Length: 330
Image (cartoon, rainbow, N blue to C red; front, side, top):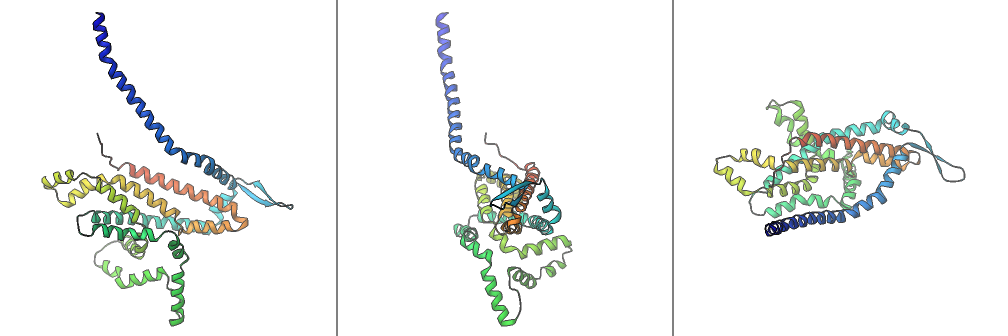
């Protein structure tokens, strides 16, 4: 009996040891993860969190200059917020305009980047070259090139030349877009198709903003390409053997499999649209901040804008998460 007990203990011991080793390995992985996240956490709690708290405090106060020098803060509650929402008509108008442009731009950017990613994922000659060409606007639109574009030096020079030669006034990017629309005549193209005015207006706005759409689709294109290349070719082969068409394969296989990428790109595009330097709301908040009497009001505007972006992200994430398909690896 004692030998049998000893044998039973000897047989069960290795399993227990293996289980303990597995648990310790998971703990080691968890500690390694915290080690890599630690610089961000330290920077957030030591640098960013105090600034966030201080910014929130400034949005509820009013500054008053002291005679001997310095500034005194007077608690005014939600006065700065009420001024931004109820009295500053320009701020409200820019908010509405920004939301309207988002409704037009976000679907166009995501759809265009998905369409181009599907095309660039096909087997063809010069595929790497075409991918680089479509990603060039992302590289060009950063740094000093973006600053030059924002200051619109080229448009001003062209407008000056036009004024001298013909006496006409404007040669901006919007007028160029209008000239393209008049040449292509989108309205006449859709006139015989019996489409609604809303669709016609949407297509017209997209054609006018085609440069911005292409310029802001590079990162999304790369994310979609990564998602498309992660789909197993065996799935496509089995579908073709079963007689499925390319249209059916796209909607039944490709589209559900890259739905997480669509979700990520939508969130990324919304954040990029609201935080870009060309955003009119951010420009206006910065202009209000430059005024010494409007610094606390600009802080309140920034918090209103921040909360609005969070609300939109929460709504979009809540709606899209119900339709996202996640493939199980087990």
